[in-house]
Amino acid sequence: MGILDTVGEIAGAVAAVEATEKVDPDAGLLTKGIAAVAGFKGAGALESLVGKKEDEGSEQQASDTDADNAAPQA
Image (cartoon, rainbow, N blue to C red):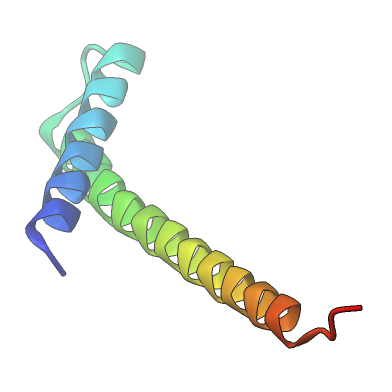
């Protein structure tokens, strides 16, 4: 896990707390804490999903390139 992953997770936590305050201006500390944890975990999961999709895309592109190179030329 790099520093950018951690920054993304922190940004997710901050965004979740801000959204909670917009929805419920009188939200308590516990509610904001739960929102922060959910935002932190959610951002981490989202980054993981995006990383997997990028890896799958690069593998697919590499296999397509290999198939094009192996195809007989007429």
